[in-house]
Amino acid sequence: MTTKLIRKIVIIDEEKCDGCGVCVPSCVEGALQIIDGKARLISETYCDGLGACLGKCPQDAITVEEREAKEFDEAAVEQFIRSKETVDDELSCGCPSTTVARFERQTVTGYPASEAAPDIPEPALSHWPVQMTLVPPSAPFLKGTDLLLTADCVPFAYPGFHQQLLNGHALVIACPKLDDFEAHRQKLTAILSQAEPKGLTVVHMEVPCCFGLVNMAQKAITASGRDIPFQEITVSVRGELIPG
Image (cartoon, rainbow, N blue to C red):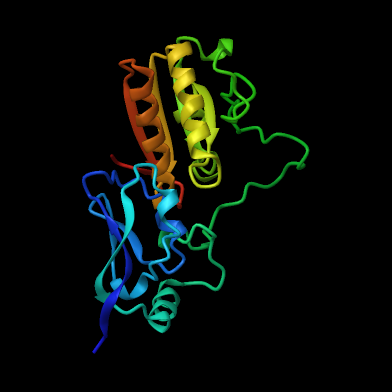
């Protein structure tokens, strides 16, 4: 039987938590998961109580309290992590749905690598730069446009990105896990305030940490004080649109 003792352990305020998933990869023990739209501690034995996840929560919904809890079990953590691994090499995100996978694709051949394939459509990108850090809020291409905020991985995963998603939009890209979340939120707020876009569409991957992009956009809309139509699109790791 697992021993209970008075020790430090994380607690999640469900009223504050918006399920963005930013905290999940910060817990190397895998004790946190997004369940029913909220971050939850799936087992007391997986939490070491050190609070590495605290500073990763944009909502300050995670704290550490001292109470009676099951003892931290390092061996159980190792077994749990191994059980989630389907291949030897796992992405740093740590999300179960981001485990390295290889998909069978039909390869188009018959033309030199230096030449465009005759059936490849024209690119729909209308401006440069596109990285959030580099795009100035006063850029002319942002003014009064339909703005598309896209996670870095989306254009690589979804083959119809240019024609079905990017066409007719101004583009900014960001990674909610690897980039500076707060800096991007402030930049996006400035873009929405100054450019007054007709609408904002966020396209992200299905992995939990990527939902932070939605959280960022919603915060920026609120901070801008503008009534901006918002749309969310999710792409699977196999490159398919997931119905919302």
